[in-house]
Image (cartoon, rainbow, N blue to C red; front, side, top):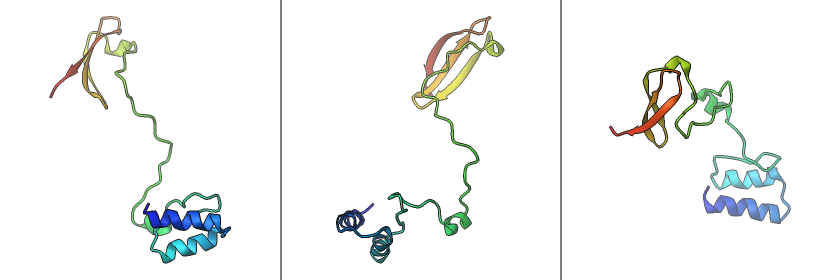
Amino acid sequence: MEKKYVDIINEGKKDGKTIEEINKLLKEAGANFHLNADGGTEGWTEAEMAEGFIPAEEKPKDAQRTVDMRRREDLAGTKQIQWIPGGKFEVEYDELGYAKSAVRVND
C-alpha cells in the first residue's frame, strides 16, 4: 500500500471521518480498494470474480515442513521420496513400516 493511502486512512481516523468519507478520499486518490465498516479491506469484487477467481471450497491445509517419519505399514520395505520446503528427501522404511532413515537427495 502506498504511503499516501496510509496517510489518508490515518488522518481520516484522527479527524473523526466516517468509513464512507475515508473510502471516498481513497477512491479520489486512485486506490483500488476500500475499507469495511470494521476497518479491514473488502474481499473480492464481482468484477474480480467474473475474471476467473474461484473461491476455495475448504480451508487449505498447512504445508508439511518436516519429513514424515511416522510408521507406514503400507510402505514397509520400500524407499520413498518426500518433498518439503527444505528440499527432496529419500525415506527408507524397514520391514515393519518404521522409517529407518531420511537422506537429503540432491538433484
